[in-house]
Length: 367
Image (tube, rainbow, N blue to C red; front, top):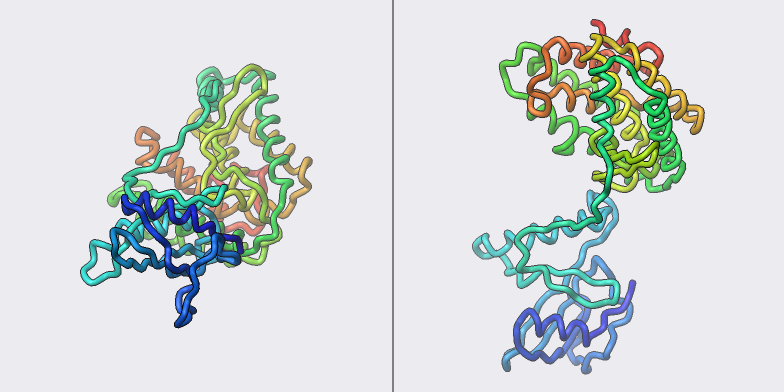
């Protein structure tokens, strides 16, 4: 509950209607009394998620509108951006349907309590400080080409693992958010089902029945993970080598955090470590050489720092998702069928194991 300042509401209405307005009444929808006094300067107890009826005079005419926000509890409305998405969509389509109640505007409340119009926006943007550095995948490219790594490569791997151990220490008790992130792992357009839908028909290395079976196994994994809401932690959400910029030594910046502030730590761990497998398959046909050293270093350090042995019981569907990404003919069109087949072996075999053994990756790669 907060308060709605009528002078700021009045200014907002003037901006929308491009004329002077005089507010006559503001109150919860359905609770209007027969005789109403002039509204006070502030409406205390204004509640988000409660529709309010607003009556005002504009150009000599009485107008009645509904001012409505959304509740933030559950059903995909947890984040500010979720509610913005719904309200922006409603404003864009309500007036296209015959006989639908008309949307006048869509807006937002500012930190100062002002109302800001967004109704004439056609697209949104973000502006950020420019980060300096070279993307981490360039390091992996170099290791693949030369077949060797440096001490700096080990130190950077350690730094990336340390970073996850640090951010994952921050926990949250929002059980509904954990369930949402596991649900989105399957159904979000950027996640498992979005990826399987993107695979064209007629591929030699994977068929529709195989993708269907992967989805089924991931649904089973969703039900295994649902009780583990205690694992909800601060996450990046898209922690892969293209979203990390290194400068000198182990100094780095991360980019493009995705899909929510809280989630399952396995999301971040698998997003980075599967790339050591990916590069090694291209170079050696298995996890071997410097990439095996980096993979093991990352995992061992993370488990030593966090003590999170339960991680081995939850990574399976996250590795499946990331495997679908790097095996994709859309994202990696020049990848050999040999590597793709081994990636799908890894996905299928990982989904079949109850406890992931990060020390025996090659057993998952072979049929």
